[in-house]
Length: 193
Ligand code: GLN
Image 1: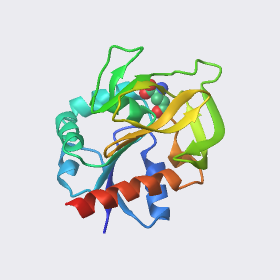
Image 2: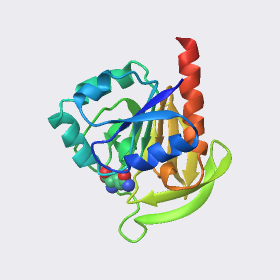
Image 3: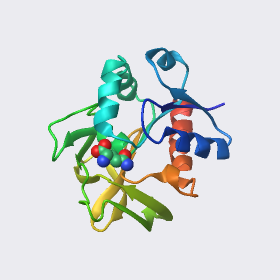
Image 4: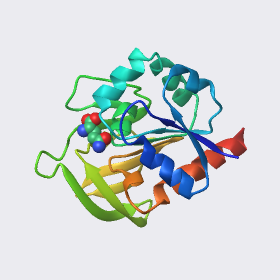
């Protein structure tokens, strides 16, 4: 049975749990270092505030181990702030986090007025609802990165190996498609082992 660990130090983690409940997939919340020793087949980095999450991960001594797990191939889905945590580079911020994914990300990229919006667009060629909240977008990505969604000429979802990043919040809509896509990756990864 697949088990997904959901980072739960800050942000919209409970909504991800609800999606996995809907899909009958077991999940648990990662709140402190000891939770990282529980077995997990995939990891969710939720939306929230990347600066706060980054700081808490360091304060709680979870940062290095999480980074190591991602580098070792643990499948990960980073949404919004979670995408910022994965990015190799931020275009408008000095801060840096895991740097495991070859994407350059612009924080709060839509300005104040368009800070939050809702649209339908393709993710991996399937139309899905997308909720953006003070969202980042992917300003550029490396050759190994597959573009999964483009909205208003900006890349808003991508995959590199076992890492998926979305600028929008797939956990805040009725669609479970992004999570199912992630679970396919998790299953493929398990069958490789
Ligand atoms: N603006 C937030 C940040 O920079 C991300 C917003 C979100 O996760 N909804 O961390």
